[in-house]
View 1 (tube, helix red, strand yellow):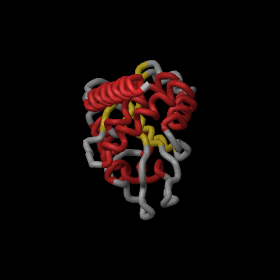
View 2 (tube, rainbow, N blue to C red):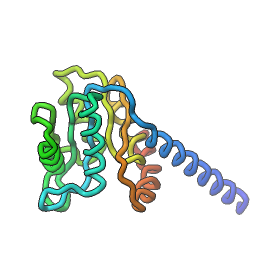
View 3 (tube, helix red, strand yellow):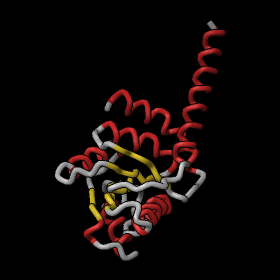
Length: 187
């Protein structure tokens, strides 16, 4: 019995390691193409409307893609966090301050998680018929985010990660392991 437990533990650790290695490699891959829309996944917006470093890194990457002509529309999505400041509004305000016109920004303040962001994106896209999207988030979140946007109906989905890194990313990477398989089973 002890042997089976040891082997099971080793298999689980190897699975976790290989999954995490794939997620890091997928998240580190630069986006060099073009897409119809960049989907920026939310994170903390402080009570005064400023973006957390994680979120600012994501929005800065989307802004870079927009300025490079790789995307023409920025779909900024998040929920209402603990500060009660809507994440989508915070991202839009930041982009306005950087010179992005309202016509290029779509705000979704009902994207409380990656699934809802993808669902809201596809509902918004129903009349537009965009075929491609690039999901902009932290490196460890790219694989799951691409999966759900693709699964819900976008034809071509790529990822672009923020350049912001912190020690808490290791927690995010470990959290993605069960979250990814939950998305596979539930959605």
